[in-house]
Length: 495
Image (tube, rainbow, N blue to C red; front, top):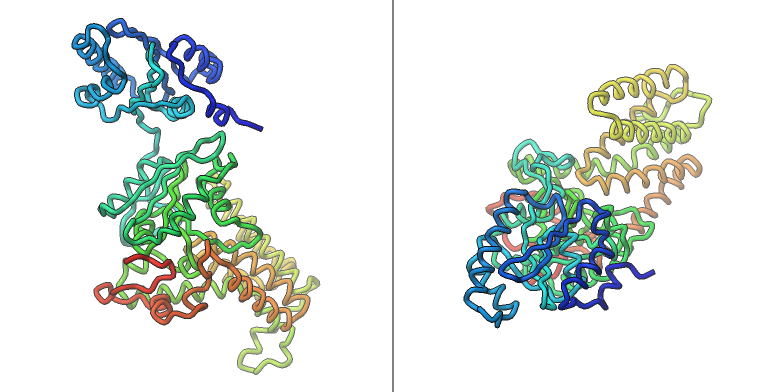
């Protein structure tokens, strides 16, 4: 089905102002859609109609701009008494005399309609097959606030917002590099969502940039109106593999660091996160706190997060195996594998505990903040004390599942922690049904899955597979910053 924006590719701007007005009234629903404004003007006997979208401008600013526009046009016409001028000449004159930032000519009806729906002031002039676009937009936006996910104790508190312009400015504030490139694209047949493609021209590999650019231009879906996830799924042709191939971040400093390392940043309008890609699995295990602490503390934190990722996946399954083989355990650790006998199988207890943790997480997210603490108390009683009193789950199950849940939430990447949760469920089921063999098979399956995963062409387990000593050393050790030289990179950077 052809959308209205696609059909506009065959429509030309008419020199007859009335024809343009009639066409746009029918197309945009002028008079039906109250937020779209069409205002006719006559300046120095030149008929024109201005179109814009309400909510993208301040009324007093618009009044001053229109008054300045009228005065400037009259001055220009007085210099050309026979109207012997072109629209280019008028625009050039406005650019150097009128008191606003951007004036440009638009030659296609599709572009004119897109600008009208995006907020600028678009002016159709009688007798000309081109239109004027004056960027008067002031985007509706909330104030810059601390990131909700990637919080730190020390360091910058500014986070991205839903306005693409502000997000790009937050990144450029940290990278005042003349080689930083910001390309503007519109994706989605109906949504026409603004997307910025950011990269360092003298660092990022050209083939990687082209791959992102072509993938973004080929997105036909309108699900992009829901945010950045649709863009990611089109970029990487994501199937059923749960492991993230890009990183979402709310922090401008993380995005700027990715650019310096040769990654590409995609900023999607209306989304308070940006896409940094491609990534390996180890990019999701790094936390900004590493670089706001002393090196030895950063090393400890980094190793802790890596261990937390393993614990979140393996701990419940490992306990099930221990319980199944408790007769063969050494006395020193035999107490770990002897849970209290209950009517329900141990594997089912873990599945119930996992479901309880997931329901509690959703309840906290969907509950108003004033009631969140009450939900926490009720959940603690229901899934803790009362569940053990009713012999639904053993205390050991709650301890191991609680440790796995804490380890999951300690992972800075929510996307990786969600993938680890699914792998934890797999390990629970395999260990419950097949015992130690199932546990081993689960580990092999996860390892093979990670080895086969490629993030936009990048091996997911680099620098371990393929092995790179410099990269592996930087993976586990956060060195003093004054000793950091040229980094090993899988992104084939230019520098």
